[in-house]
Image: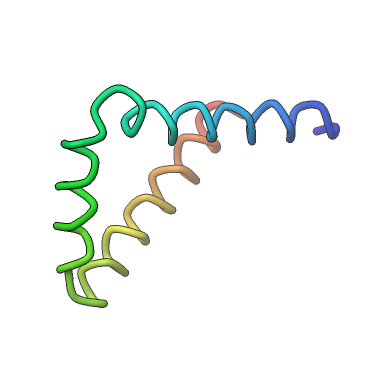
Length: 62
């Protein structure tokens, strides 16, 4: 992997992360407020699930 691939992946993350607040800021704000009310354990679970899903996806693609 070269630096170009890294920066393209980083740019794609920014595009995906910025899509919802741009398209529907009200829904994004409500969702964010609900996320703030989750316990630490729930946040860790979703973080772990996201991390493992990403690793599995990378493993299948590469």
